[in-house]
Image (cartoon, rainbow, N blue to C red; front, side, top):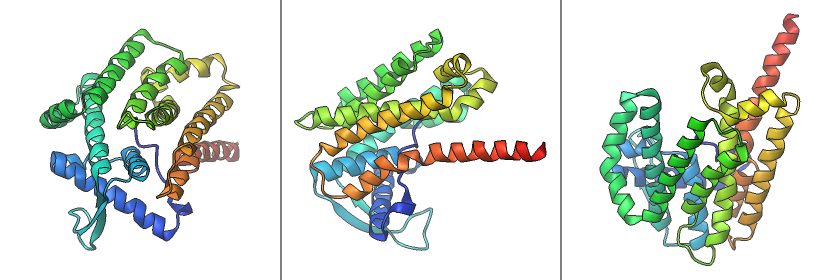
Amino acid sequence: MFGYINADRSQLSQEDKHTYQSFYCGLCKELGKQAGVKGKMLLNFDLCFLAILLQSLYEPMLNQEDFRCMIHPAKKKTGFSSEAMEYAASMDIILSYHSLMDNYADDGSKLSGMAASSLKKDYERISAQYPRQVKAVEDYIKKLSIAEKSGETNIDLVSGFTGEMLGELFNWKQDSWGQTLHCMGYYMGKFIYLIDAYDDIKKDEKRGSYNPLLFLKKESPKEFECFVKINLTSLMTECAKSFERLPIVDNVDILRNIIYSGVWTRYEYLQLKEKRKNNSKENRK
């Protein structure tokens, strides 16, 4: 489901591109520190965003290190490390563990099952350190499973499960900024669920897989695209409102780039792909 909260690198300055990459490489290094080589395979942009957000808001000590990357050994990489980076990596492992377990349960993927088993000790360690966040993820998995089995068609209800879970993960310290961070995570989580459902709708329709957007598409085919665009826009507008309430100065241009532009790159790609497909059909007539 995750992987949609990305930067629009074409709109970043060279300095901000370097900073963004340093957070990304730093998160990769931290995942390796917490879970070994397998941890590096869990790297995703969503948790990189969380790392930048929390680092920029709370400003814990940020260390910088130049190192050789196993995947890109030719040139030294720069990576950041901090308490916020450690937290984001831990949340990444929690989410990845459940994602792998879900794949194993749904598809019987032995590879996913083995990968999840290899993360079990790391998951248990993080569970002891962050019980509130782990409970939020486990509750989310249970609610989503019930919704899928019952064929729940209320997209607002189902996307809200992702929103509540991500809101808890964003609320790192439960302090004066906790509610604002929770709101930000809530709306971003709903956005992620909706755009993922939209991204998967053709595949799910072919396979007969659960997707609450399929019901809406069948009920109101003419209004479907408009519904999706309006709801995605509304959710990110609310997310942005919460973000702008936070007293962030460092990396604010990177964060705004992601919130106002980067999150839309996948949606825009899907629209362009569909347009080209339709044009191709017209040309063949």
